[in-house]
Image 1 (spheres, helix red, strand yellow):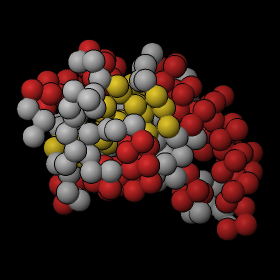
Image 2: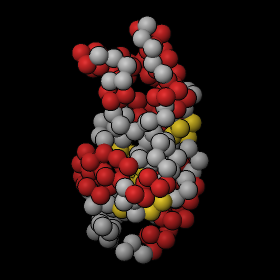
Image 3: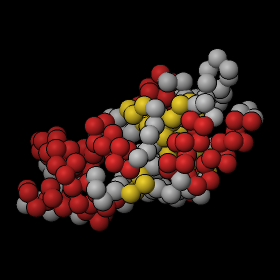
Image 4: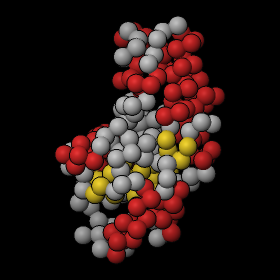
Length: 211
């Protein structure tokens, strides 16, 4: 696994949905609005149990192929008015970003979410990473992680584990999203924390001995 050195300062990547933010209430509201607008039944309760993959994958459950992109674009348009306000920070989210920065490191967010909406969430919640990169899922997240020299990626999904390992970064996970600890362990997660409240203490240990 990659390690940080004096010439390569500590950079830690974080996933967004269900890692840094509990976006379920907001996403639920946005799906209900889209359903009301289109007249197409969307089971918002079910949709929020499988967050992580790109929006288009979820839309494929509710719309025919030829409508998926149009409906995904419309969802992203209505999202700010319905999803930002109800969304909460996950316990330990602000502290985890701050812990990286307090050590002189850079905290970046790498997410599959529409980048402008990701930035709206973080600004609304007062979570202040050094960089936000959107539109990347699973192995594709490695593009941004490599570009920014991340040695650690923190997520909640097996796709996040794959992204970290593709970038040769340490896969640190929290079972606060759709994947439980056993599933994350089976996917090859390197470190499993109960939630982000445990991250600052873990990071101090890692910083002292990044082997």
